[in-house]
Amino acid sequence: MFLSRRFLPPMSLLCAFEAAARHQSFTAAAAELHLTQSAVSRQIRALEERLGAELFVRERQTVRLSAAGQAYAEEIRAALMRISSATVGFRANPQGGSLNLAILPTFGTRWLAPRLPAFFDEHPGITINLTTRLSQFDFQLEAVDAAIHFGTPHWPGAELALLMSETVVPACSPALLARYDFAQPRDLLHAPLLHLASRPDAWPRWLASHQVAGAEPQGMLFDQFATAAQAAVAGLGVALLPRFLITHELQQGDLVQALPHVPEMESAERYYLAWPTNRADYPPLQALRTWLVKAAQDFMITQPAR
Image 1: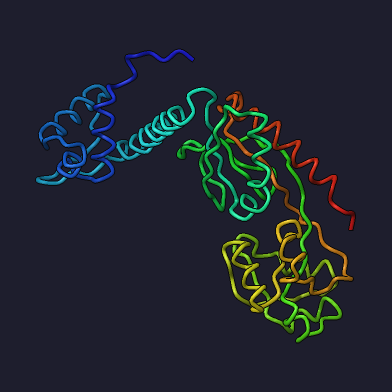
Image 2: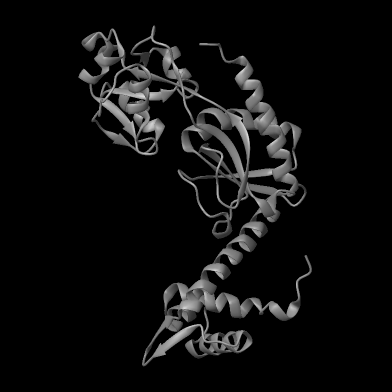
């Protein structure tokens, strides 16, 4: 897309405006940029003249963003962040390009990270930068090219590629199992149940799927799978966890299935790769998308039927 230079203010004006908008102060912006307060004031005024409207409301010795200035500041900040990220990525890997990927922490550390060497073997020129996000966000406001998403196939302003499903199992420490001697799903209600903030209805759905109706289980709340799993290892309760994310703990005997003879439940949600529509043709993203979909498909083939 052709960009008319008449709509591109000088970078110095944009940087001065972003700093002043963030601090709500020309003086603080001047200190950050190593300029005088009058220099920042002149740059803001020059930008306002280019735009044909005031960005700040000036009241005696203070300034505050106008409503239009606030909206413009958010757009400019996002654009500057993307420019900065692109520059850092290019300097880190000028030959192949880089990609900023938002990951779910446990999925990223337990499943994705061990497989990334295979990706780098196939694409040695690409750098992937990982950042943690627990929920959906606005791609336009963050310097992120793609994200791992767990949920329904819906993300406003983004496209998605299906990766895989998961099955969840009630897991606890061997000592807790010996203490409660669970025999059927309803027995779990006698023990502390551990909950995930991102899946508040997980336990009610699991219990309902095993004919335990009307239950409203109470218990500790966690924001990440890894913390909930460690709490279960410590004997604090029974956690409902994706089997593929706790393979190591099950193999080591740190965790056991609370009801090994009860059928496992497949989650209604799925794992997806999400990306903003305007980045769909970005070569590093295309490479990751193709590789990741195949890696997930290969993984699902190896999973035993239950």
